[in-house]
Structures are given as structure tokens and as C-alpha cells.
Image (cartoon, rainbow, N blue to C red; front, side, top):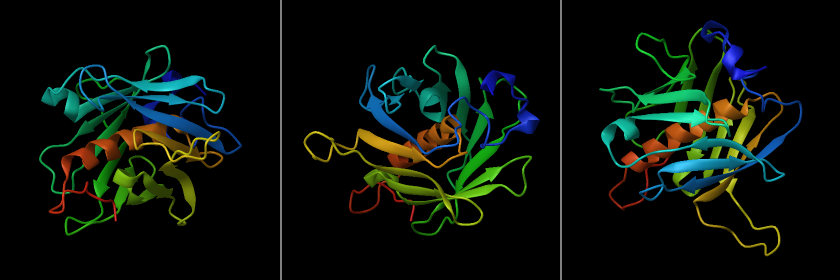
Length: 210
């Protein structure tokens, strides 16, 4: 089912994008830069085909507070936007390009404002559907869990298959269990990346999700 044909009120992360499959899906995610380090992303499938991309055009605050996930042809799939003010570092997600008055379909927030915590993903319009993100995105070690505490997606450091060498943090793996949508998973990655860039603890390490 194409993203462009989905009604916002019918959204479910189990069927929003064309990367939703009945088998485990493996993506390689690469942070890119058009003008400044870490500004965007390109995402490839296991055959090396471009699946998603995110472009950013500099350090202007409006580009830090709102990002657009696109397909390989530049069509908008999701918009994620920081909600201000928010003690929980709350971000909201919208289907396609956000327009004034449009309601978000999901939100990501810290589970607690005290110390290091996991993140809660709230699904508007689907009260029984909620996710927790646990781990440390700064170390590329995260797991997305459903309400049954079952893993539906994981983020891990990428290992070069030919040399068995662990690659840098700008290249990592995103693995999806059957039925979990790739575009939605990448929207969550965008939020985690922005929140990780915002918070630095006293030791100088990026903020953790747990």
C-alpha cells in the first residue's frame, strides 16, 4: 500500500509504506552531509538500492526542528517536528508533508524527565498500539518494543562483511521484524538522532535512551 493513498485517521505502522513485508528486512543507514556534518541520511536495502533519504540544508533552527523523510524520488513520506515547549523532548510525526492544521499521527517522548530513560511512542487514533525504545542511540544500540515487549525493530553498529571490521557510527543497521513498516521506523530514527544531538551529559557523552 502506498503512503500517498493512506488516510491519516487509518494510519498503522504495520501497513503504511511499501517496505512493509512478511519477512525480516535489513537496511543500511548512512548519515550524510550536504553542508554540515550529519545533516541527512540515505538508506539502502540489502541489494544496495536506495530506499529512503533525508536532506537538510544547514544549521538554521527550522531545519533542526522539522525534518522530512522522502522516498528515492523525493516524495515526502513523513514529517517529524519538535513540539515546543516540552519537558519530555517531545516530537510529533505527520504523514507526508505537514500542512497548517494537520494533526500528528504519532508522538515520541521521553518516558521520564528524570535521569536517563527509554522513549515512548504514542500512536494517535490507535489506543492499543504503543512502542518503547530502549537502549542507546548514540552507541547505535537500540530496540523498539511493542506493547507485548516483543522487539519489532533494532538499531546496531554495522560490520563490514568482507573485513569483519566494525564501521563508524555514521553507518549502522536497521533491522525490521515482519510487518513493521520501514518508513515509520526511519521516522523514529530521525527523532532519536535529533534528541541524541540535543543532550550531552556531564561526561560529554551523548544522551542515552536508558
